[in-house]
Length: 99
Image (cartoon, rainbow, N blue to C red; front, side, top):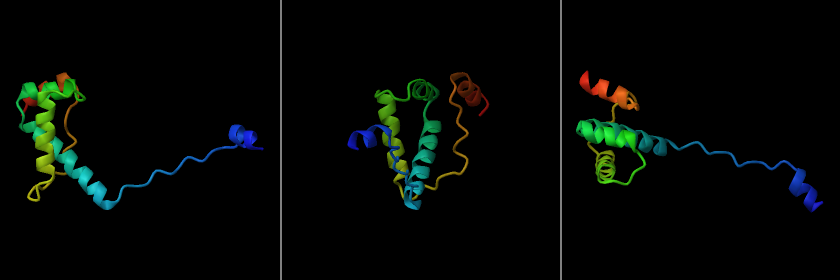
């Protein structure tokens, strides 16, 4: 019985819990802060962040620190249209030229 159940019985995956309103609010604040800080950085730092987002370099640490400070600042009002960032290197350079 035990082996049969182990091999053939369908196991139920635990359900993913929906984020609470507070968690969703913080996620929105951090993502909006990420974009806000990103656009304040010089072009070469923007390209460095886009090309290697998982790196642990000086630019990425500086960006993360600024994002955390901004997101946790009570005066910060996140924008609604923060998702308009291009992620491709060519698109990013074109976007910067057209600003």
